Length: 354
Picture 1 (spheres, rainbow, N blue to C red):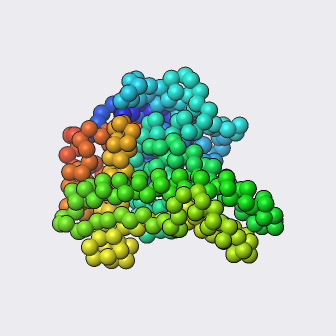
Picture 2: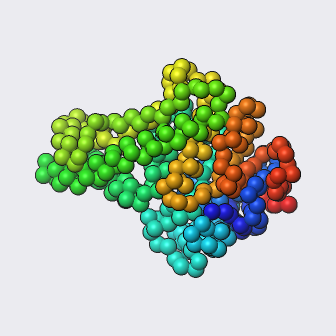
Picture 3: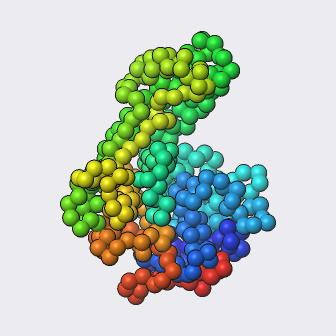
């Protein structure tokens, strides 16, 4: 897949702009605070209508305006020339693909895959389990609609169970919700175990191309509970009721899962150098792109938000070794990249593209 053009209206600090993107390597050049990341953010919305910078989508319209419009022209691997429009307004959000309205996220997510690298990716290694679960859930939802549906229904069920726990729901009511939640929990566990195993294999191959030496990278899925099958989850929730009622929330289950990075020296969070940690996070994003390609049969777009300059020269060279040549790359930076003649360069100043 490749972005060919993007038109933006009233998005972040951009009143109106048009960004041509037909080339394989596109570089957005400008000082900090000019709107480079805003352009990448708009491109990234095409994957799952989610921002890589904020969970508060109300922050996306330009200041003083209540709606924004994005119009994309793409060359899709299977659909050919494709037009995508995203219009967010006070009454909600509308999405059109080739003029046809898409009403359900499950029918949209993953159709236009992209992967974003940014400095906050270090939080995948250094941050809380919730950061890593968000990564895991987005990655698996993009390639598997059944996973997305199971995850959505599981969280709805857990919210209802928590409401009953707080409001002294009866045993019969709790049993009914637990019977509804358990199949979704079992599905999520199975999808995560298989998906993260595959992603770990891709990550190891990718990191070996980036690193200076064999450092033994590993990504380990850490399920919160060792349960297999809906009956086991029903039993777990039944046995946890008394403690959950005291706390007022469901304490055990897939909503507490995590994963861990490690190298030969031990846990990457505690023992890896800053360069190794950055290399791992970059490798994870390239592995995510390869995973999308493997599972979807589509070539994703790589969006790199001012991160290549943060890598040391060895890992920067390793990035290009690991990055498939046929991936379209849209990168940002305050200085021209190495070998600028290989890039299509656009300057960004005060929300305008030169």
